[in-house]
Length: 91
Image 1 (cartoon, helix red, strand yellow):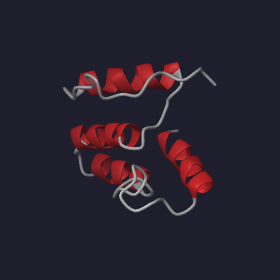
Image 2 (cartoon, helix red, strand yellow):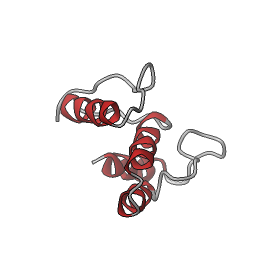
Image 3 (cartoon, helix red, strand yellow):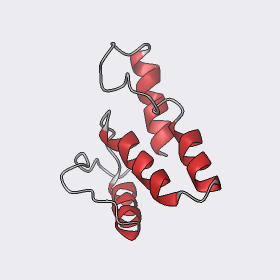
Image 4 (cartoon, helix red, strand yellow):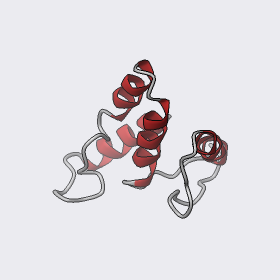
C-alpha cells in the first residue's frame, strides 16, 4: 500500500525536481527492495526501508496502516520517534 501511494505521487508529479523529497533512491522501486530484503532474511532492513519510503517523501498513511507500521517497527526494534508524518484520514 505504501508503494501504491508513492506511485500515485510519482504519477501526479511526473519527473521529480532534482534534490526533492521524491528524487531519492529506493522510492520508485521500494517494494522490490523490501521484498528482496525479506527474501534474503533481512527483515529488519526491510522494515527500515519501508519506514524510509514513508518518511522521505513524506507519505501520509491512513490510521490503520500507520498503526501497523509502528507495530512492525517496534517488533524489529526500529524507532519511529518523530519520524512518521501525521496520520491521514482512514480511507
